[in-house]
Length: 467
Ligand code: ADP
Ligand code: MG
Ligand code: ZN
Image (cartoon, rainbow, N blue to C red; front, side, top):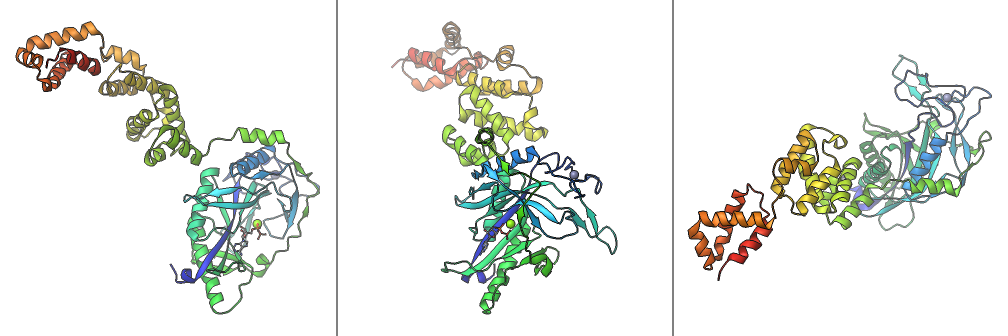
């Protein structure tokens, strides 16, 4: 790490684009399918032919609101689409439909693993542009408009990140919540430690992976520090990250100096969302990994390592919870799921949703062990049989003769037989040599084929002990 970090503090704010997982584009019915042949998913609307009118995709709105609520944002009941005007060959309309003054959502935050919360400024909806393809035809640039009009949200953070590692952690946290977050622009400035106000920022574009963000931020930060050290002025401009050259350079001035002349999109009415619509989406939100982890720790008393394993995927967590719901014991359920179930899956390489034993069946098995109907060792045998051939644990335990016997008469008769076979131990035990209890229990267990209920057996033997 450069020595600049000793004297200058990094100030970072990120703008992250997330594609909304719709089947069709934001304002037309073209498919969003990735990898189709160039320009096959286009129509008069996304090609911007004269007179074509956009119609907003309801599914996109739904997903955007869901993302905003997942991040704790306040969803505006009225937001306005605007035209962001600029010229680029892959933008046939000459403007991008976005949201400016009145975005979809405000506030919200993203929690970092160390507990800090990074505040969000806003989330707005917009459409993607097409792609310029520079390496397809020698000396020419090709345009693919399949992506033109694909729905996105842009998530803008406050400048609260203080290191490139923070930026990486923020992006990973976002990705965990939204499953898919594509990086877009990283804003950075440098200020001497202790200085209150922020210095001028620059925006680095082209950072399309998490590690690229961290690298680009370090390079650009070092450039700012050097300018400040030399008494120069950082100019607010757009920079491009060139991963191959490991370099950040100024974008051509035309790319950098945008005056977007935002104005309300005349072809789309304001987006008005009812309270009921927003509340309905909020109600249907799934539980997020962080709250699930907290819940497992507090309600089941599980350690951090166990919680990590059980919440690794939603499916594993759901399966585990179904076991707990059935047997009522989080700790035992955790041991069985992490040990026996996941170990079996590791060997077979299968997915938990296809596991041959249903979570309710494992729950029943655990309940039998808890209720002393079978021993833990016998439970393992039953489990193995369930994995192999399926079936209900009670029936299997019966068939394999593994049900524990707690019946007084049966236990008495086994004890009598053992006493008769071991007359010496029996009389010493009766005379008060209590340490022989272990030997006698072992003998009865053996005689019963492991089925004697060890707790009851100990009680009954205890009554026969002298002393
Ligand atoms: P733009 O019009 O440039 O896209 P946005 O408001 O969408 O503006 O995003 C600006 C980003 O720059 C935000 O993430 C914000 O936190 C960040 N930012 C603002 N000021 C600074 C600064 N001085 N240093 C670093 N980042 C900053
Ligand atoms: Mg922006
Ligand atoms: Zn279209």
